[in-house]
Length: 171
Image 1 (tube, helix red, strand yellow):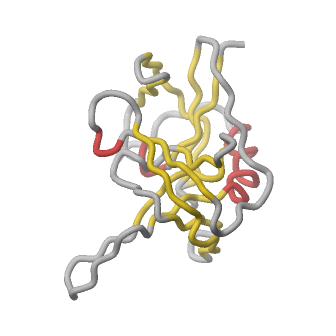
Image 2: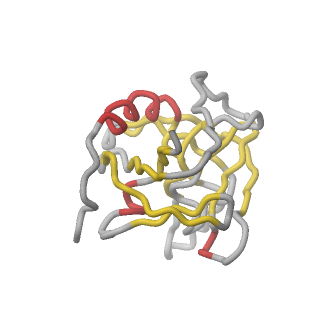
């Protein structure tokens, strides 16, 4: 019917009074907020009106060692979306956020969070969320990024999608 749902991280839209979604690196749509799950860092937006391509969320568990790609707009650099390739380093449960995450060595930089982690067949395996960074202590961390895993997305999305449109949270 010309509408689409967009899944991203809550921290990407937190504090916004409005959000625009860029499709195909060029077309901008004003988004409405459908639902948020701040604890698991998820948000669902809706956009309208065009013909959109659906990307499926994988229903199978991802295996350690699987190849993945992460799509996003690293560092907000103008132009086409960037793609980082890596492997699944581990799948972990974070009890403090009640969510499954996928650890990867693929680059996750500011601008990538909220973007999809895709399997090589093009299914969404997760939503790129954060990386571990240290400052000081002589410890350098590279290639330790995390995405909210498909097994959490499949459980939480139905509730977020069924929510009525709401105002963007302020603050």
